[in-house]
Amino acid sequence: MTGSGAVIDWLLNSDPSIRWQVMRDLLDAPEAEWMAERAKVETEGWGARLLSYQDADGQWAGGAFLPRNFDSREWHEHGQPWTATSFSLSQLREFGLDPSSERAKRTVQLIGANSRWDEGGQPYWDGEVEECINGRTVADGAYFGIDVSSIVDRLVGERLEDGGWNCERINGSARSSFASTVNVLEGLLEYEKATGGTPESREARRSGEEYLLERNLFRRLGTGEPADERFLRFVHPNRWRYDILRALDYFRLAAIRTSAAPDSRLGEAIDHVRSRRLESGRWPLDWSPTGRVWFEVDDGRGKPSRWVTLRAMRVLRWWELWH
Image 1 (cartoon, one colour):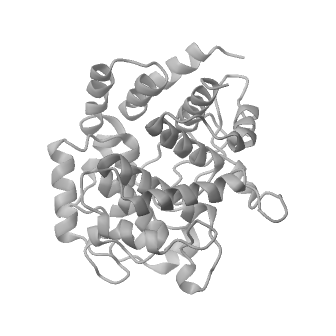
Image 2 (cartoon, rainbow, N blue to C red):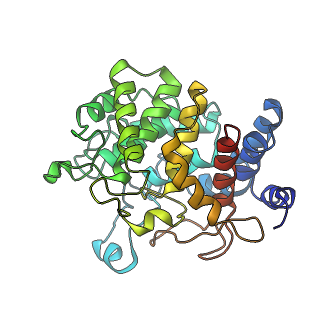
């Protein structure tokens, strides 16, 4: 197998949005060094390119969740479009746009003033009506310094009896889903990092974690069978989709926050991640959601992915520090 040094060199020979995370999470570079690299996200590479598509009113593609003049036939024929404000903002968070930068501050202010949700017409930072969307809105808002406490309170109240969330609750679903739960958990964790959270939000996050852990991140509680084979296939960008690598990276971040040891129930998912490593030491992209995008950030399905590899390497590094 190719040594990890060669893989890290491959990761570093990339975009600033990847480089700064490699420096922080894999190389333990001094904060001043990775922060300097992170600052380039605004002016170089994918971050600068995505910002260049922003509308004058702060939105992307003229809409909150869907592009302006969206035709439902597009979703049916080509897949969900990913160019509107919600997904563009989440991608900037993944890239690591510095929330203290003037560009970031102006962006979230303009969105608050001008963007309205397609479902209900409420102001963007008041949140939408669906748990999955609101989980990501909380994550973005908390990351960029917006007060999203009212959305957090709503999400806490929408938790289901089994401990997680389901965006189909409003349509009668009484069982949580993996995807909705991880979207909400990421939001609650980002809110907790920004504000400390509330006793209620922290308890809700713990119960959501337990929902996933009881299922070893991918199994049905009743039968033990995989709930969805796609959960074991690595997807990027995740958008709202779930896979075990996304969940593992969430648990890594949550544990780092409290210096907690990894839960042993993550072990099966960790073993699966190890098993998918290629001879080159890299990890493949198994699939990406179909639909309109501003531009691609991976080399294609079946090929080694820097994003998947970065996530896998930092998850395994964290796990192995404790084992």
